[in-house]
Image (cartoon, rainbow, N blue to C red; front, side, top):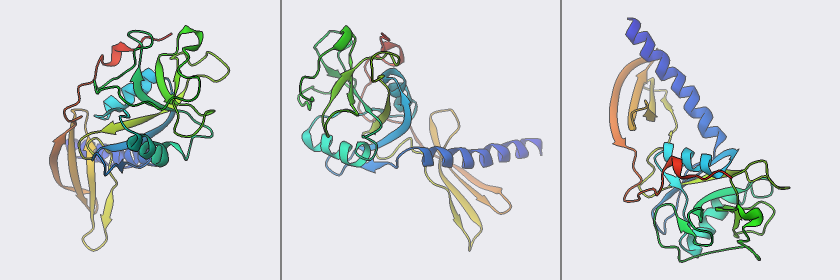
Length: 230
């Protein structure tokens, strides 16, 4: 019985925790042009932390390889918060100043820099963002030191998945007629998604393995320790 109560406590706790997380961040949106899924994480952090957040969710800090994708990300995820918050993208020139690349290894063949950018202010701006003080759709380079400058380099993470909606928390649904509570997407720390069904008064009906987190065929360059905090 102790094991049953422990599992029940974990499941019930996850219902509340996962729904709190969903309310805090943007919803996931799918770009029909490339089939990729995107989400904004509403916490002001530095670039390295933003990168880690996306990778922990099985995705990567978003890359922008076309005007269509740039417009889609801005209109759906950045525009609503842009007046007060910057947003990070997965571009950097931390390896060699002036040589920008996407952390996924995709070809760097599209840019949307604001006028006069990138300027590598203070000799330390190596990370890509939609910068709050600048015009719509345009990019800025910023550093990874949250205490530097008039406008600290903090921003929300824009995460991307190139496989359909893996890593999402999902939303719990309750069927009044059957009394079944379905939690479509739960992760127990093993990198695997599970679907759980509970029936009143919260007996566990089933726990079904779904699919492992995946970034598709993208390989993240560098990993967590690649950030050069300045």
